[in-house]
Amino acid sequence: MNEENLTYNTPCSEEILRQINQYEFNRIWKKNLIKNNRNLLGGIVVLLLAIVFFISKDYGVAGLFAGFGITTCINYISYYSLYRKNKKQFQKRIEKEVFDFKTNSKDVIWEFTPNYFSFKNYKTEYKFIWQEITYCILDNQYLFIKASGITNFILDTANIDEINLNKTIHYLENKSKFKEV
Image 1 (tube, one colour):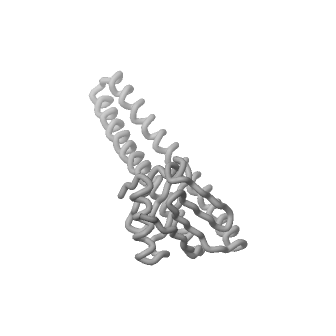
Image 2: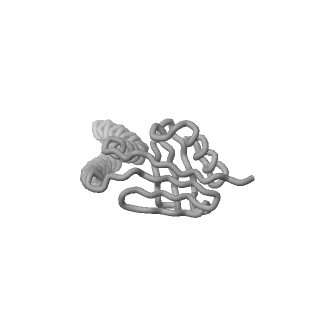
Image 3: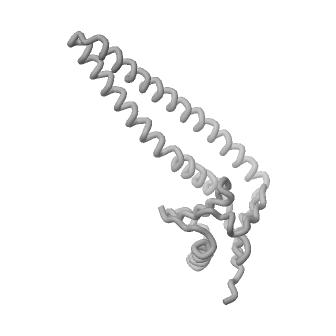
């Protein structure tokens, strides 16, 4: 059976660019922030235990628990400040990306062939053989394609018609590892 080449353009707009990047940022940080909040809760519980032991005049155990509790709270504050710093840097990068995009606005070109996957936008062009596509994730709104273990491509499924989306998924299922999240 001869596989067809699938090539299509998707529009690129400031709104889509911001939406996709914000979604990706939140997806990456969500688990970490939940874990950090749980650690803070644990630290508060340990501090309360330290207070109980201090009241009962068991100062050695109270000091031990207080040390763990304080360390946990300090780690929480450190991690939260790291998150806020990364969020600011992310916002700056998005603003630069939006400026570059407005200056060089072009549609994104996606190409799926039997031998390779290709992606081209206003600033870069990538071409990967199918063995380099490590996995694809179909979310309820986005199709994630990861290549060479480090390069991500995000396709907003609202930008393509149902037929091309099904063909794209078919290519990814047959040519790469596919994971649904």
